[in-house]
Length: 135
Image (cartoon, rainbow, N blue to C red; front, side, top):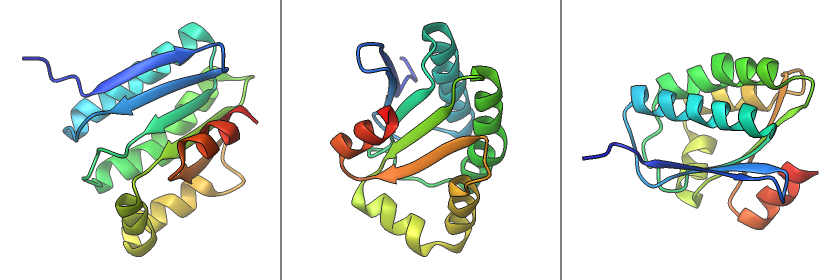
């Protein structure tokens, strides 16, 4: 049985890479998924991403720490000189957790800071997320 819960779709016609998670996964699987996203982005030279996490209910602090502090900076370095813009498509419930959980707020504040080597924004509307990623 496959453990794949992430689909990765390069959209060179839109200049973005779309990754969608159909369900939660273990931290190890999520890390593997993110590296697969980076491999596809590198292959297709796409530094603008739409990460659809609406169906991932679990917010693992380990993944929050790892993505904002380790993975996204690595991805930005690897994709340079093109900028890395990450539009994260969230469910309203997930966005509420981001806004109320102190640990998640810490990771989010770090990831959204202007001095990062990547740009990160959260959205609940896919059209707005794509428009921002492509800007």
